[in-house]
Image 1 (spheres, rainbow, N blue to C red):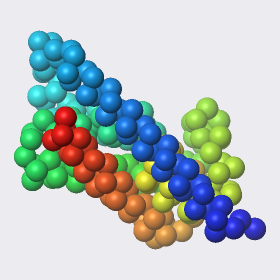
Image 2 (image 1 turned 45 degrees about the horizontal axis):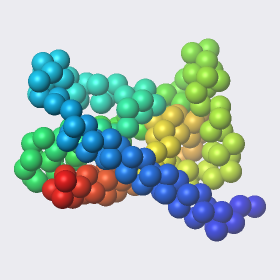
Image 3 (image 1 turned 180 degrees about the horizontal axis):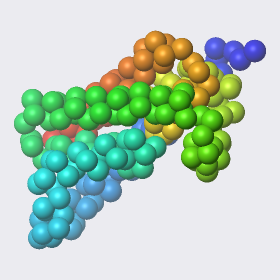
Length: 192
């Protein structure tokens, strides 16, 4: 039987990892922003100024196990430099991430017996199965708040046939993560 303290330790340990990675990403961003003239690059400029391309890359990333950390997209959205616009973009990013998690749940639920899913499971998801067995739905909240691959965890949870309504409730922590991280990014950009 897993104790409550084990779950809290798991949460705080992963939250600390998340804060570490956020701080590292912010540090890299600040160094690049202050030392490298990215404005002179027409390729970067054309991508950065095309929200449709950025959002398509983000959607692909979120559905494909969170290849690119969402914090990069939060930093990208800071370019609009208006609190309301920034907040709306962050909300859009959070909704996309939440929907990608739901898609991951259904992929896991419906395709868990197919060869393609078995391949994906063996290559990418298998290492998390022990954590799912140990922490159950609590893992969804942790994956929502921390750098654990949210979509991948959702696939595993879906393949384990966890109740969908409980999944939706715990996955709402994803919005809290986006709110907190985007606030920290906003503050760092204002200070820096």
